[in-house]
Length: 140
Image (cartoon, rainbow, N blue to C red; front, side, top):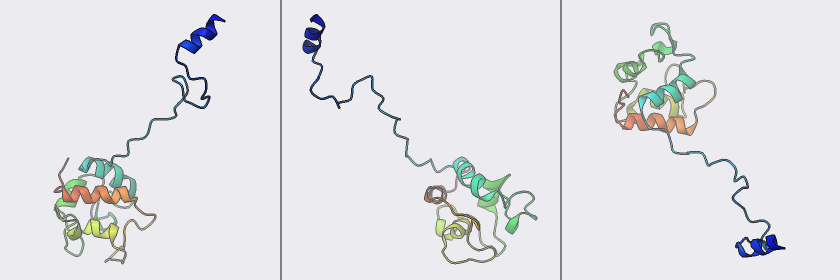
């Protein structure tokens, strides 16, 4: 009977059997839903490597649309020009950047149409590219 007295005196709430106690599993911790930082490393890893390099790789002369994004992608994007003479990326201006136009325009634009041609980008990938361009398209 002494253990009942201890239980009653300990402040344990026996009237609410559904209440959570310290030893019960509370489930997984909530995931960090913060968007990735708009750096080129993240653009390369989360967008270019996943969605672009499959077609845009190798020698620029033989890559799809003459745009190679596997090696030296930052300089290609920030210093290169499309086959019709427009810059791939205009630092600070996504609307003037061919790469951003190609992934966001609903209308087919020039050779190759909307990118990627198969599947689509997640909104987080579009936002990442836009944030990187708005930040001035830094190399890191």
